[in-house]
Length: 175
Image (cartoon, rainbow, N blue to C red; front, side, top):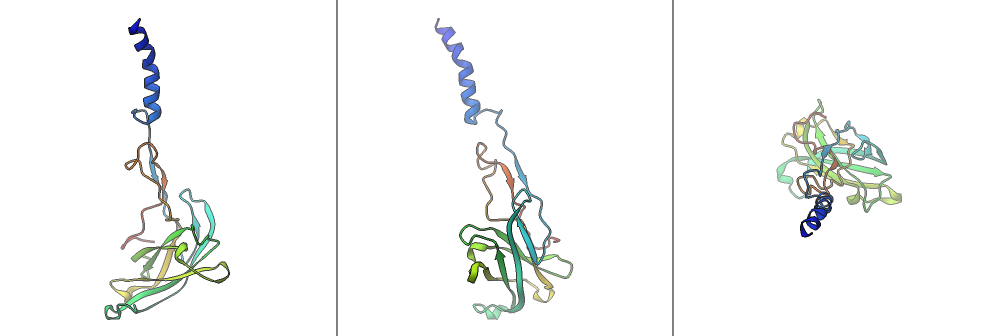
């Protein structure tokens, strides 16, 4: 009679293991979004490529010494604007100084939450320290929202996975 009770409980134990994520039946998948087309004005998209209703734009840029480190020579000083973003939890995009062939010379992420402005316009400015400022032909934005990248399967095989933003642009990437 004891043996019958033990065997009756085995299917229940297997179901609990499967539901808890301790089973090899659990499947976690990470995917990376395609990098969107860079431009001076872009429609920001989520990891599925759907527009968020936000545009990001490089308003202007120039080469000049950074006021805190003028001895380092010229850097790229650029102004940007987010339209349609929420200033507390809005998107972020990568901004890249590029040469005439659209090869990235330096990139960094700019956040709408760091921008300020009147009448709902979120404007900000930032600096890109490029090794050869004389090669800079422009500043481009990459439309993929970089503000949130959930947990990966490696970090959490039970609750991780799903679509992630593309890897941030790096020096030498063709945009």
